[in-house]
Length: 200
Image: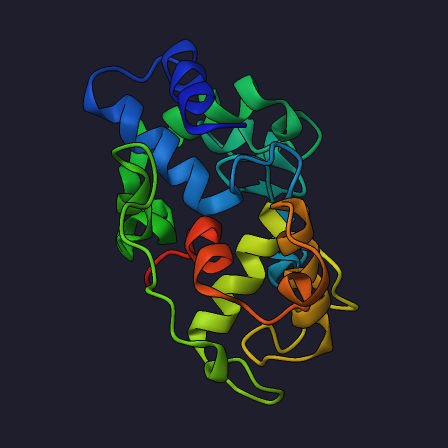
């Protein structure tokens, strides 16, 4: 879902005023707008299930045993965008936004005004060599995946430049209409700027 769609959803869920923008921004930071994404699976235990959906709400194994708003933490239901957003509002009303790590870290702020406005400048083609490790490369990885150019074998070592990055960036260059040596998987300034990699 896009940021405008998330804001509409937040309004439908009962958020008002600036809270609408915050809810949409937190959702984008948490899930990139994917209503069925599942996270925090490494934190699952006898009490807690994984985090579900747009606002990555921790599910409970037996929510009926708890008091509101925790009774809403039903894994299957949280995959529904509106239910997810309404549950987020109930949790926020009970505990404020500090329940979300993307809020406390400030990661949500980049989505408050329509999306990231500060992007990484082109670091130069020589920056992209096999084995190069950088948070910029991790950010590039995530942007390529978001643009549908995922040619990676796995998401491990996302911050290290390797063959998967070359293949994925080549797919991005081809998507832009480049071909031949201009689509060799090594970023050039034009293809880099169009990818809009957020500042890290």
